[in-house]
Length: 400
Image 1 (spheres, rainbow, N blue to C red):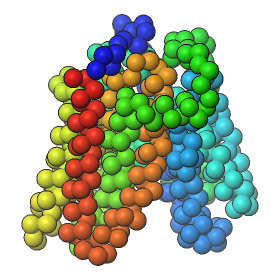
Image 2 (cartoon, rainbow, N blue to C red):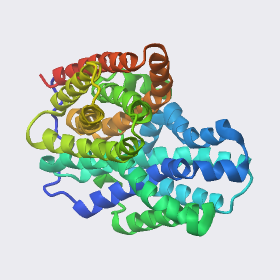
Image 3 (tube, rainbow, N blue to C red):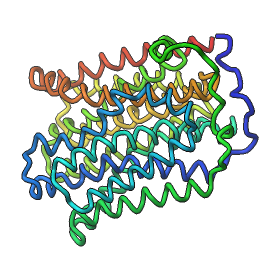
């Protein structure tokens, strides 16, 4: 497709690695807005006595903001400036965690969680757009693969240090530590990043179109939509696999071990996808291979395997291939986009559809598992892989 490979204005000759890593750390600190409430769920349940439903909602409500406003945030960020949006979002997140550290009434906590959704969304729109802009062409897929690991790394770090923090300093200590972390990221990026917004994104093109017209154009543009459609089937699947597959492992010790290993395999797959997309294959091809590998694993699961270790190896293979998908989808965006505005819109769609997948995936898988057991899980995975491969193929056609 003509224009798909048009350079994004001035391409940097060298990757600004320090800035890239700090932006990645900023993403990790923002993802901890999910992880800190996940790791402290039982303590929140005991402290506030709000019941499992409302306490569970305090975890997921952050993602609903991305589900509703994902594309809108992409449009707004390009207009305001990505550096301003990023630093403002981080400062907002630091302030909200500070409020939570005082353990206010549960209604106030829920209000801060809604606002944290805007903070998290601002970071996941601005940071990857800036990373792509600060990366030399020969490193862009690698840096996008690195960015794609931020969510898994955030949960791994929070899982490692969260419980000890709670044990020594209670819930308030955990939330205060997060406030200091995300606030320090805002200060570091404010000092380090150049104030010239043109370094991080092209100026928005003058347009007389209404907001709704612009919004419709984002969804009608294959360059911005298709990476998100490849990504949505990943979020629909991974959260569900990590939640339900351990229940099929009968040995308690093996199940506990897999609950630690599987997220790490997913994170490794995401980074591997960035390297493959940079040096070996187009990211669309990587996504196709990932979905095929995931489908083959699902097919192997229903072959009547009775050996727990072999079952776990197949599950590990599935999670590793699933982890390739976000790295490939994120690498597609700077490859297909013609300017930084389209990049931000692409990340906005990924934020929106990613939250949609994470919302509808678990109950859908639960229904199939209830009706058909392991066959239902494997069959639904294979259907999802068919759809994800189809959209990856259509994204590949954009460059033909």
